Length: 145
Image (tube, rainbow, N blue to C red):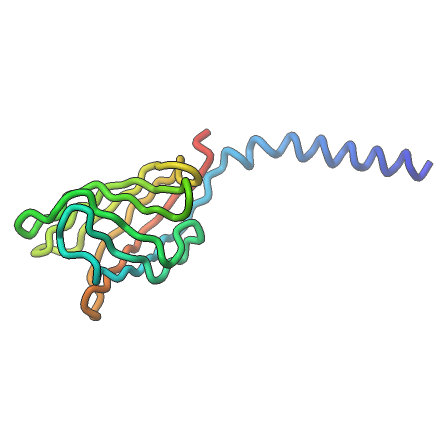
């Protein structure tokens, strides 16, 4: 009798879990995105990078490099970017920044691995410390359903 009740309870739990799983999988994670980056290695050229020193988003940890595909032209940066956060996990996006009319904007929209369905929009602003910049905005990180 005890085994039968346990089996029935487990069957009910399994049915409830299966019923809720599609809704949970389709719900993207959303939140604030706050990143601090050190741009000591960035000189305005194509292929230059900044290194994230602080992030509130576990998927984009400190040490991640933001690589800029295009060079600054005049005082304008209008470039695709990539963020490699471990093997096979690359977020892709675009940044537009007029150094004479700050702040700028960066967006992330997909990538590979865990970033296939990322969407983010951040405001880019300089810190009081030289070569330090902030990305502050929001992200949505879901299953794409």
